[in-house]
Image: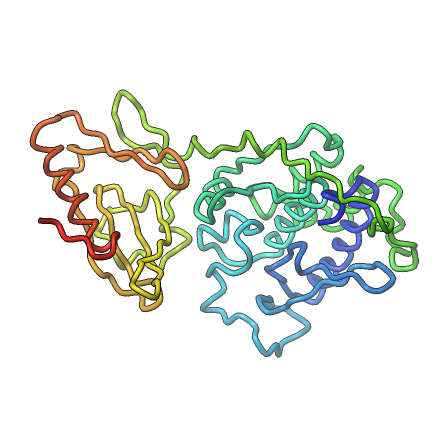
Length: 343
């Protein structure tokens, strides 16, 4: 927060200490499953300690067999961790592996060097879409060695990630990015000085490269067919909403809104599907409160998601369909706008 981002030398030292710690965790037969900057603590001397083992998963040959909050086998494929650091295989409900932590390590190194996470976007849904699509952009100031290391840690195949594939952690430590690191004496070395000198103004955050990350490619439509082009289905990683879908129906967009009352407000979940249909859900009780079906025939109307907060509904017939569509919108106002009644 003070520096904006770390220098390559600073990031190299701290990434090396994280590698050293994660290697030890994996040696014990444990998968951390929530490696991220917030879980990397600094000692008074400035060395890294990995914290928060609330999501840890012991493997079958783990040297530690009793963990108070360890994930059970029936939850081994469920989504845990933090959205921006979750690997694609977890979003597809694949079993946890050591490669999960190596993906998160790549995301963490990217954030050390840039000041922001590699898949940052306007919502968790869009973050997940970028992760599945492996939509990653490297700032110009990244060195070739840093790009290559992050690229290999963010391999879509967890078994090929550097550290999990051939050569294991020895291959990871030999990567050119870590040239000059004394792996045997890391904890004895003097850490970089991260704190700014007193009175030094905090630098401006260099987020210029983020400004071009407009997720407009999510949900682009084809003029020939009019159908939405989606990168991935939300159903694969957010199964709690599947109960509200019909067979073959999929989610295009999801958003939390506030339902205003006289003195209070209540959160509601709105789910836009490809029917097209808008589903209204009480997220606290996970109960459906109603839905708006805009057309009985999916070919009549097409959805185009234009941004994290906007979508368009298009039709080729400007007659009765538009009247029907407007009617549905007016009816939807009854729960969107307090006190509204469609006369």
